[in-house]
Length: 322
Ligand code: UDP
Ligand code: MG
Image (tube, rainbow, N blue to C red):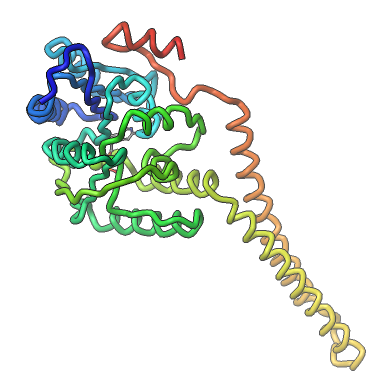
């Protein structure tokens, strides 16, 4: 047990979106678990523009416990931006990142922390038995397959954001200012020594996942564009192949013309090839456009998120100094 006063040993960062139903239980269980480890912990709840009572509850919690700090983003930026805001504010030697919906069990933090102390700057919770619906598991598997293929490194679909990270890992993460961000993928990219601990995954106790299919599809597309130039390479290859094939097709047509095989001038072949190649061209232009859009986004160099208010005036100062 660590009794060093005024030192934050562990920061728990939780992105909060429409979580009024779980916040109290979450905070309670985190307090119980963390107090067994150290008194020097903080719970940073980042409200990602929820339209329910989440922020009121966060204020209430921070009034009743000195460990709880709240950050309210000005609108819904997305889970990974909320995590980024929380990591910025975290002061702990170790930082735990977890979901607000109690699908990640707060009790596991102790196990993760013990493993981390063995000398792993990153300890990830691995959900052997994901308690999500079939469609979600399937789409997430497909997504990680795709991501592994695109980036050429292996991703484990059982691992999410839940884990404990050493201060120096989080510092590196804070330095990464790219606008398209997925916490787990960025941690993976850094490549610090990593341990995985099997944990139980709970079904959502209440409410529904705010990750609609559309949100997930958009995220997947963003990631593909941000992490890989494979689509553009594929496009170039397809273009070369198609031009080669069309030259071949042209030669064959010419030979057949000289052999007198073509009697009616080829309306159908013309129309087919025009339609086909315009389709291909439009698709390729689209992909190029997507990448240009990405460049435009990063060139703007906007802040990743905007903070509306915090429960702790000190935290605000930190943000401004940055
Ligand atoms: N979340 C967020 N912003 C969003 C969507 C979700 O901060 O726009 C948070 C949410 O409060 C939770 C975590 O991200 O802590 C995971 O969200 P959810 O449970 O909806 O996703 P799933 O578990 O289905 O991946
Ligand atoms: Mg969830």
